[in-house]
Image (cartoon, rainbow, N blue to C red; front, side, top):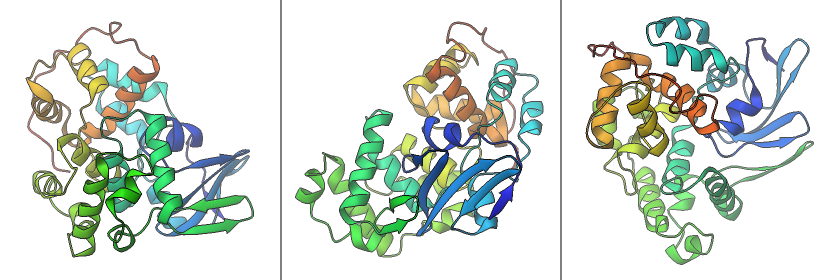
Length: 290
């Protein structure tokens, strides 16, 4: 099935950029379970093709309908952001299933990328749905109702540690009607406050879920790398991660989170050294509508 011919680097977007932890590679193909259905993606001479899934949903998932060239132009007054966007022309910011993003980023707390991927895989293979495909076996996250039935010791045995009760309590909340899908339609502040009611969801996890799973392009997750880069590259000197998050959103506007993903990847991989770019002294601006 033909998906489109927009510029996208599948390996960078699906695996290396640390925004999703469930894609597997088989040769030139990349496979995962999206919205309960196994999908394989592959680039060929005339564009991007998929086996499984719905073309419109996959275009949305991969953010192919957004003009990333315009994004670079939007941040022309902040050279380090424009440079990062232009440095990774194949990077897209995914629109994942909110539940998948929520589980993934609860598991991400105090973890590095390799371990997050292992924990996500362990949880999926323990109690998720398994799909046999001609390119290999794929497994999705368990539905909230299934995860809610798990006991803490069995999850701890998977290596998730102190996150086990958080996963169970959050799964029970979602299974009992927590409005996870509705977060996409709420304004940012309301959605952020609502998410942090869930067990294991602090400010950073909430912003990751909002950015990668709920279409809030202004959400600005702050971890160690992001704290360093906003101070070094953007000249922001706010106190604490929440202060940095709020200042960055005020500075960068409605697409702050998209800019963050490019800056984060540039910093984490050394594409731009933290000490390389001079801080950009750009006046704070009123947040644009999302």
